[in-house]
Length: 445
Image (cartoon, rainbow, N blue to C red; front, side, top):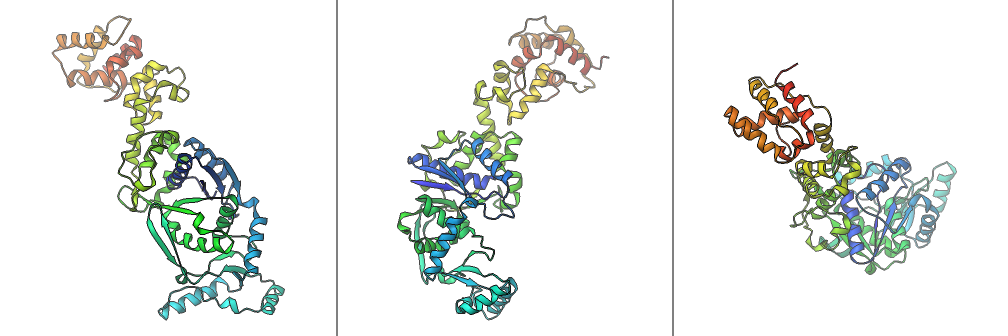
């Protein structure tokens, strides 16, 4: 089994494409197959080397690797040779119509109640007409002549599918400047590199019918290919996700503090009845099933991703995060704060609470309590029993209890209304910082 992930380096990798990449990787690893990373970069105007580098970096961050990689821009002679074979077989023919002429044709067809597909007028061009056009500086572009049939296959996700080729325009495979287009290069590469299974988005279903016809024309056996098309993602409300993909790039999610294990766990569970479980790709191989994926669009909810991210952090050992924690943060600190984090970046704020400077808010009406708390603050050393003994003494002295006692103390000590248990946090803060904050919050100068 050999699969491929074939992004175009024209932008940052987003969650929709990451889901496809992950599914390809899981299927390949599950069956002992190989994984090809192919950069479809023949769109020279939009493809950028910085995007290619970012794609590889983001895939590795997600925990994916590959056994082989190449760029289509390095394989132009291969496509030229394949084009010549199609020309010799009468399947690739030259066209001279410009976009205005094609638009006019489509409009006339629509007015006549006909489908706006290409009329194959270029098939009547003579060699002399083409030569004269070239002499006048106009190069033809090349269309693939589709077979007059239906292409059918069994899709591992969508079930039985078919495409009626006679309802489609013959696709342009080679531009006038000689540059091959995606429909063509993809098939040539899949044949040449020995791809056995193609797993991609549902928006490629029609492409699959065209490409199977092209696959046969180039000498391939369509029975040697397996297909799976993943239904497209929607947002949490069922709307198109495409408009929001800029904010859902892996690069942005990474900057926001999302863990790769949370993202991978979310993506692999999308469109299934399975509850998402955080895990890096190797942890998810055994449970991955194509037949568990629904044929309906899957909803990507950032809130679910955030909840899974928190779940991962709450159980993460210190060694898994130590190199990303603030300098000086140790295993004891991590054990105290991790249960209150949704994002690892939030640990910086709690490190400031225990080891830095916090200016607590003034608390009008609570001055007497805070002064009493400062006076009753026990001597060090402190442990987890210090908080209970200290607050018990304050409860006895002030008559305060519950939230009316604990909230003013928490605000004074941390500047926050919620957070880690103070019995564990207080020893990390230490007496000197605690005393200063109580006095500041009480209004002392």
